[in-house]
Image 1 (cartoon, rainbow, N blue to C red):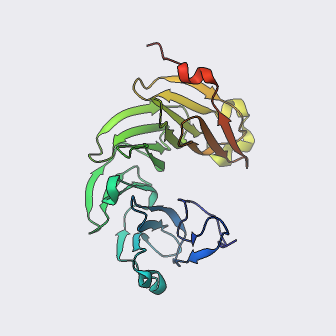
Image 2 (image 1 turned 180 degrees about the horizontal axis):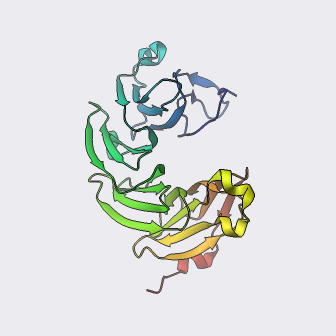
Length: 264
């Protein structure tokens, strides 16, 4: 227990900072609107989180330094960045904790400096909302998932567009394998349309693409609603998916998966 509303994002321990074993709450940060994204930086000393634009409050990106307990006690971040135009829908830390990479509801991607709050770089490769951003294991790349039916791979530092993976339905989440040149994507049609469509037409499978060739080579069925989140295990030997159907599925790869080579 701890939250009284929907939990949108978790990173080890998050805005409710907790000891993971007894589950004891260590710190609490109050906000005026829902927290959409959160994360620890590379050192584990800085937390960032963004709030939603709702109930008359605008979207903010906030930074707290956990080495200064007074910031938490006073509920005063050392840096607050207003996002007046388009709210943040997903965000991750860049390499070495120098900046945050944020995706917005209009498809824009920004790099926000963790020191000044300035926008360091801006690109707009998606034309609809970005639902998810995840990093590669070495933090050199990020993958975005969007309502425009695509997932895209970018260089973390320069935000140069590298690859595009296309589907026929909105993509809610995408993840990069830590050991293979593969990405997994999940999504499906809008949740409000699920009750009127069969699982076959709804496209609720997890879909695997080759990261270099942009070719789809496999699908995994199981969910009977849109997939909201996918993630590879850190060892690359399994992946998990969470869906609108209320299930979290953990899939372990067969030995043949690791010997697979895509014929181009």
